[in-house]
Image (cartoon, rainbow over all chains, first blue to last red; front, side, top):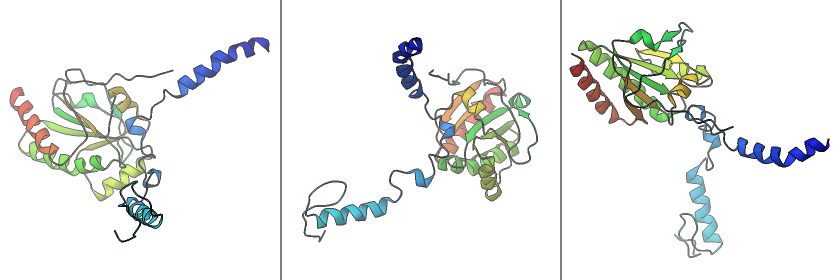
Length: 73
Length: 155
């Protein structure tokens, strides 16, 4: 028991290092290529939402929405 | 453990390929069977849009060059983890060349494929002459030019 505990500081970092070294190969990206896997599945909707958000919040900047708060642009 | 795959480069002998056919489970088909011809070995998947652009273009080039009497063949390797996805695409857009299936990805691993699609132009002696990553419409012309150049040199 003591021996295995003593090995823990070696095993945990080794495990972390190893798991981070497994890249998805080019030919394995079928699942990642699905539309539902996109961070932004509907860019048009995001653009409209951010435009409305920044206008209504009277805020300026951020994403691609013009600011000012008048809600007219 | 980190695994680094050595990519097959221009000037090297093309790694062996022995895979079953995608559509009728026949085979295995060996790359070595095509020795003596110029081979365009293409790794593609149904989820990769530029791959799908390349298929009909390469089919046209292959048929045109063969009609001109050039010993040229396209060997396509589908790497879909669900081969039926690749079959569905070919049912919509059939091609005349041989399409192999490698859902495990052993052959792209042997070639060290870094992006999709990647194709290898292999000379009649089995040596890689050109590695081509990605595909856009205008690439077909360049590839055809290279094949014609190779065919001219080997005559």
